[in-house]
Figure 1: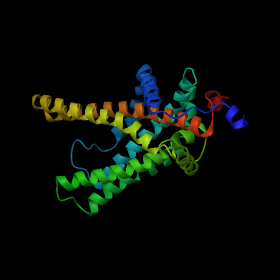
Figure 2 (figure 1 turned 90 degrees about the horizontal axis):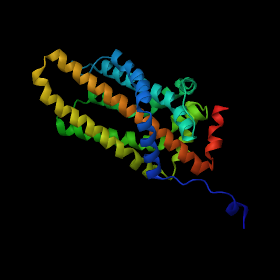
Figure 3 (figure 1 turned 60 degrees about the horizontal axis):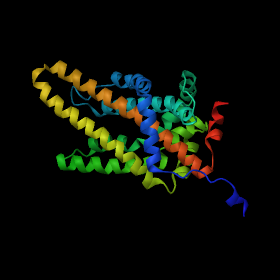
Figure 4 (figure 1 turned 90 degrees about the vertical axis):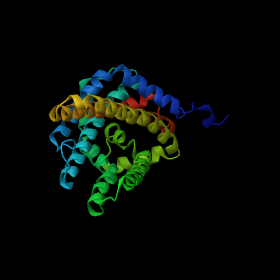
Length: 266
């Protein structure tokens, strides 16, 4: 028997396992995870609101940047907590603080990954859309580009936080970890994303029913509140899922068992 055959094999990546662990961790810890993402989303409230009036492109860019920083804060704060739980431990405030020390490279990575949305704002300004069909077509094109980047760089944040890598090194690390598993990552991601958009659609229908009974100010407040809640909810879940993805990709690609991944806590 060869040495390779005698050694324990690393755990294989599994879509079911990633979804199961992600949903389980999120469900058991939803309250404090939501507290973190709600706090991060407070930055969005400081940016110009897209619900009150058509925004100029600088205001749209500012709002987009606020979303980006809020997402980076949530991802950095949650990553080590999820790794701790995957290793059978209990997350603490120290894990949140330790994750936030990587906020600069995490923000840079997030900005790079959201470049397509930034470009979409510029395209809308330079080449105004001629109708709803063109709006939808542009949205689909930019969304496809975002997904291409995400399945390649989706675990770069975790590489920033867990392995303490810089922004560019983390992007390269993520590309190596995700190679050969990108369609699986797409499948893992699209499933909860459909649920998130279904939530948006359901709340929009409910608001259409309730809005006629409210004045304009109350309607805007209600719309912003529901958007804020769903954004925080989805941010919390996807922060968990991307960390679970990183954990299992690293175990499979590097042969790193859970106890070794936890060296970051030493």
